[in-house]
Image (tube, helix red, strand yellow):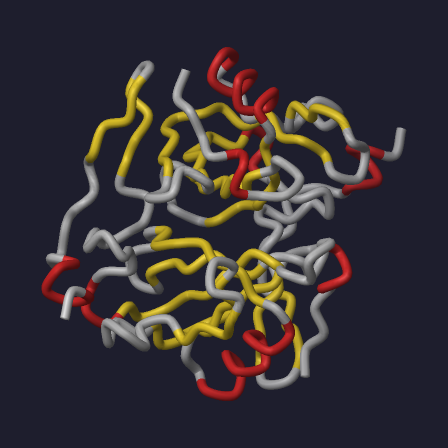
Length: 126
Length: 126
């Protein structure tokens, strides 16, 4: 098991950046604790720790839009990760956009630029 | 001023991902507070809050390897940023590697893959 520096953060959570393994687009950022890290390595699917629900979160468990791990990169301090993933369903964001980073700073406002892939009402609103 | 959700984290710090604006390579992750965010917008150079030094940090202030902001993207929850930057000096990591993410998970170990651009002793060891 590759050791990460979970002690670096007060809450034992480290940021993990999910990046499209083909295009390099940054899709989202979420957090891992030891359990999420272990599950990610074991299953080859991105697992995070949901801060809002305080529970282990297999990304895509509700939507089916799982993230298949292609590569994992660890930073110089072993306290941040990059998951290079294949994003099933083509979208990582709960709003239906391909990336959570779909808004760009334009002077003093945010411009919506990112592509919307699905209607969240259809995917989550059952 | 574009408002971010600093209240989302207990310490008022939000993660900012620095990404090479041409290649899409993720270079590093650091944290911003309100002051670092304001300075970044004002100066067009990436500013972070150093957790280890508890002070505002203009990236590259010692090494000259500043990050010129090309684009800023804000996520769906306004609690994470992507800085698309031109990395002066060609390297973001204090170890001299182009990216802080220069180690890749390979089975049960980390393999050093990323390119080393400078000798930290020469840049910082004056």
